[in-house]
Image 1 (spheres, rainbow, N blue to C red):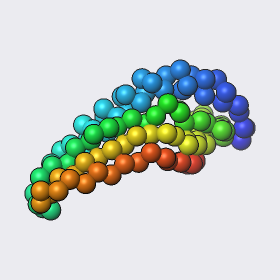
Image 2 (image 1 turned 60 degrees about the vertical axis):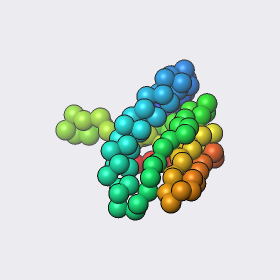
Image 3 (image 1 turned 180 degrees about the vertical axis):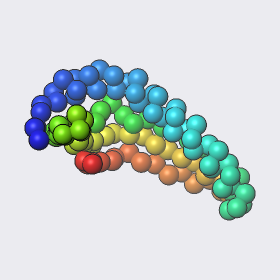
Length: 113
């Protein structure tokens, strides 16, 4: 097992983040829309819409990567990730003539496999 530095990966992620943010948000909307459309009739909701969806300007950061070389000539990489982002996820729900808005503006994620 080796611990390797991932500064290069963080620099890459920082430069790519504006494009990744747009792609991730577009994919999220495309996945969520049919699921939401399927659930709307069950709860007598008129509509559910994303008013805003962005993951913000702060990219995730890899703070470590464990690398294992196995006897089977495999390379296993376990990244450790943290993200203290400034997203703006705003969802508007209309039901019974009323509109409710839910917004996420602060989010922290720490992950390692």
